[in-house]
Amino acid sequence: MKAVMKYAMFVLIFLAVITSLRPTVTYANTDEATQEIQITEWQIIPGTDDEGTIPPDEGWITVKENGAAPELPKGTSSLWVKVELPAITGPHAGLLVDKAYAQNIFAYVNGDSVYESVRKHYYDVNRLVIPLDRSDSIRVLYIHLVNETGNIGINGFTLGDYTKLYRTMLVKEMPDVILGAAFIFVSAIMFFCMLFLKKVNVSGWKSLSLIILSIGCMLTLYSPFLYTVYGRIGYLYTIAFDISTNIFLPALLFFIETIFGKGKFLLVRIFKYYAIAIAIFSSIGLAVNIVTENAYYSIYYSIFTVLFAFGVIGGSLIILGILSVQSFRKEKDAIILSSGLGLFILFTSVDMIQYYAQSKNYEFIFWKWGIVCFVLTLVVILGRQIVISFEKVVTYSKQLEIYNNELQRSDKMDMISQLAASVAHEVRNPLQVTRGFLQLLEEKSASSKEKNYMVLAINELDRASEIITDFLTFAKPQLEYVSVLNLASEFKHIGSILIPLANMQGGQLKLNIPEQLLIQGNSSKFKQAFINMIKNSIEALQGEGEIEIRGYMEDNRVVIRIRDNGEGMTESELAKLGEPYYSNKTKGTGLGLMVTFSIIEVMQGEIIFNSTKGVGTEVIVKFPAA
Image (cartoon, rainbow, N blue to C red; front, side):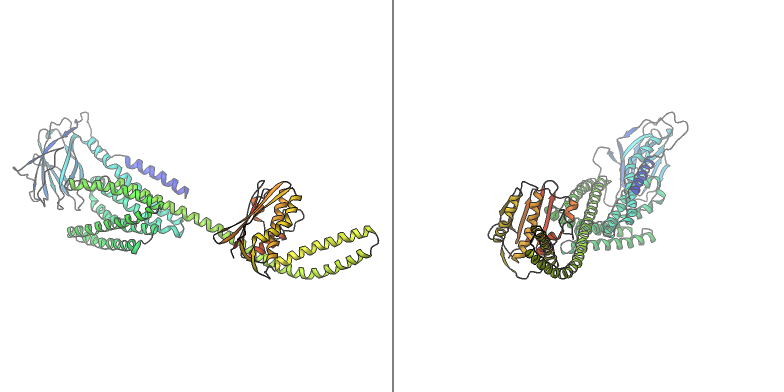
């Protein structure tokens, strides 16, 4: 994946360099260049599109560059523009028209045609350079604009060297093309990377890729650059632009549904289906227009513009409602998306205000930066979702590993339990018989040395008997007699046994058990389990130290904490606690803790060990309260 992203960065930089190259028009003998002059005043006259090449004689309206644009009659489909050219010094001059809103543009000087652009589609934003020469000095240039949509106008005239003006015109449009191309390229990389994603992340990734692709196409195809340089296939650009708008809204709502769910009353899903329906019918209408050569374009444009606007407004209100609720709940994804959507709405609102303030003779310029901010927030949200999903997978994997270890341990314990029960029963009886004979021999022994040997042998048999008892307890930890245990009384008895042992080791045993702590269990088994754990703590002190035992209630459970400041254990040693025959003691068998685990498990308890090497160990035991 990293290699793919590095390759993508390289190609993106290469693409930016290539698209930043400006096409130039070169001429021979261009020693004398025309000085650039701003045309600050011109005249216009509205009319119809059937006047041919002859402009009217009367009715011209003077327009100044920084003045208010005159209001044209409703339904104006033709506009004549008269520009008085100053003296032209260079051999290859040109007039840059910053913006002209028209489908067809014709330019005449002295009755001769000097420029012509005819479009068979309805994209009406133009930026152009009209070629002139010295012979056109102090003459009148007539520009005839024709537009069936009614959106018609012109502004911004600069006279200068044709090559420089043409380069200026292209450079002005280049950022939009580069930005759009970058979006398209990023979406292509995302589609490729989708092959390596897990299924759970594909839906969000795919919808975001479609969002970025549609936005990239809209940014590129809305720029006059392609229509100026490669205008012969302009109708293909308009078709691609309409398809991009059809993709955008369903993909956006699909992404919102993936991140935030279906919404209250299924509003997000309903509007998603609405957007899909609009996209389908709009595509059908687009196909009909292609076949009929735009015979029904005005109907298509009117109907689907309203439906699309309704979908955008309704979808935006739903998204804002969801984001408001989620942001109030301090959901990070909602806050991030709210900021991106807020910037997009702000930039688009500025464009809309300008559009209607200038009688629709305005090219949207700010919305694209709002789109960039919005897409960046979508990428951040999807990245967060993937990271969260990955963390969940890691967490689930760890839990699964714990469950597998517990299962293996349980199987191992069952097997050892069965073995321990059979061995203990078979071995215990011979041991008892042997012990009895040794006691008889001890009584009849005359020599004190022989008596010492007999006592030593009997003690070892008793130790073996204790081990067998532990085996049986581990193998059959069922509680024969269950009653309500008062932990204060139980630990008072445990303390009377173990406090002297702790004092002998140089340590102190502190008990802090309230009277009201009650659990269900077997008294002897309870004492056996806790005596095992507390003895381990005493032996870990290695001299002076302190063992604190305290109890309290927490969430309807009785919690007992045993904490010592002994030698502690490492993480690897902690992980092995309770395993068969594992012990930190030189003469330990590991059966004590195994028995303790079994007893606490039978009493429906839970045991947790925390330890740090050189600091001490803490045991937390939880039982259901009686």
